[in-house]
Image (cartoon, rainbow over all chains, first blue to last red; front, side):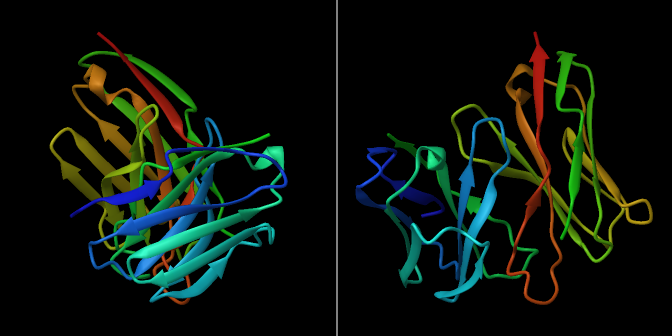
Length: 114
Length: 115
């Protein structure tokens, strides 16, 4: 399996809801990433997990809470989001946190916050 | 932090023409430069990359050149085809220290290839 998968594909939530995004890879990669992408903009890094430990948090608001239960799974828990958080959320993985390793992106979750 | 500028923001060419996209970066310690292609509604995909110890790399119709002294690198696509139409992002990272693969992306170039 050479793909990164993400569920759900689309998510609509209210500002008081709690929801979670899920990312999975079975390539044996030990680094996993969450990005946020607004329309016509580049991906913006949110979090990096390396060997299941949070290595980078790009000053993301606490209403976004990442979790890495094991080396194949990455979750992003959402709570009390704002309409401006509506975006495409991309997960990626790479062999390790070494920067020469290609990052493989998932198809993304299109999030709409009402 | 690292700053990456990408030009042009849009590029329109006729099928068969060449396309060139340029990026400049600010951190002289940066040493890995990937290019991603993102088709409409799809995920970004790596199309070519280059390390700082190499000046040029080719893969069929795609090439990347790097000028470390001037801190700029370019993507060259020859014999363009309509399926090359997409948004192209350059990216930069420093492989050393605690970067953990953190990529800084350029703002993107919308390439349109007209049949």
